Amino acid sequence: MKQIGLYLHLPFCMQKCRYCDFSSWAGREDLKTPYINALMSELETYRGENIAVNTIFLGGGTPTLFDGETLVQLLDKCREIFDISRDAEISIECNPGTADRKKLEILFKGGFNRLSIGLQAWQEHHLKQLGRIHNSRQFRETVDWAKEAGFINISADVIFGLPGQTWEEWKETLEKAVSTGINHLSAYSLIIEEGTVFYEWMKQGKIRQMDDERERSLYHRGVALLESLGFMQYEISNFAKPGWECRHNLNYWRNGEYLGCGCSAHSFFRSVRRANAAGIEQYIERIQSGKPAVDYSEEIDMETEVVETLMLGFRLNEGINKKAFQNRFGFSLHERYGDPIMELKNQGLLTEDEEAVRPTPLGFDFQNRIAVAFF
Image (cartoon, rainbow, N blue to C red; front, top):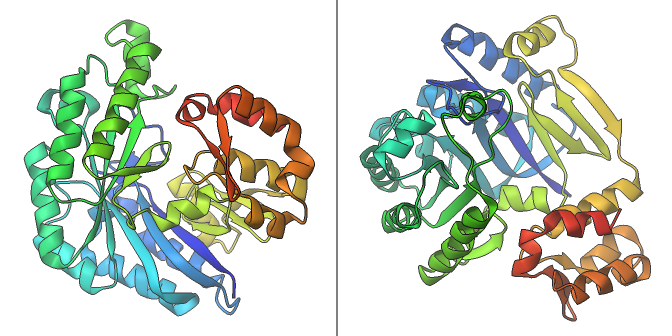
């Protein structure tokens, strides 16, 4: 039976970060219980469909704002509805300051086996500017408590390209995060999006976006540093010790099928892409009135699926496996795309061996150029 990924969105935050444009809100604690009830009801709509799941991811927002028992009940509901594989990767996002030793013990005993912790930066002044609610000591405590609870698979999120960030600060963030004993790290470049506090500050001249040359320098030096620390890059922004890659996200990048439940959650399942209602109240109202949560859906034809598979696959170090591509689509990669592949190889953006076509380090810097070549 084909296995898919399952994503559950919990959009509540203690405080909205100044760079964040995700579907998440602070100060809406009054809606937490009706939201969980609505999410349980949405999951019920899949009962009897015999859907096999091998990864589950609870994201947000900050899922660990909920008590441990509620989160385990949510996971138990997933077990009721879906055929969850025995070795399923079951991840939950966590912010330091929202999960103590007891809560982490409840989560691990309840079946969660992967913890993704939001660090973002090591230095106090960067954390304050970002609007984070924690400090680096709390991050280290959270990792220690997680390991004591039984978690082995622990990841951290960090950001580079922060206003005024130096190489020494970025280096310290990476080294300190790795020293806590995590085995996965996601490192994202700061993008200042419209609608965020940072965007308003940039317009007012309070902060400046880092120039491309400095940002790329931090990226490349960070990649080299992480490799020296035993963290191999397997996707543009993701690094892991061998064997600890995030299986849930790998499914996205391989353009696999997944279901998303909760407000603003997206799905790609049985050749249909769907998006749920974006707002918390709108989502709850839809579910309570017996209406579908879906706001938007479209059939994905094979041509679109092929191009999206290429665009996503070239974000991965493994690239596009030629045999897997032919088995999936019924024609070879070179049969349809031989010319653009040759051109991109000549530009130093792709490389190829008997097994796969892969992006080069330069190709990671010019993802848009690779994507355009296949349209």
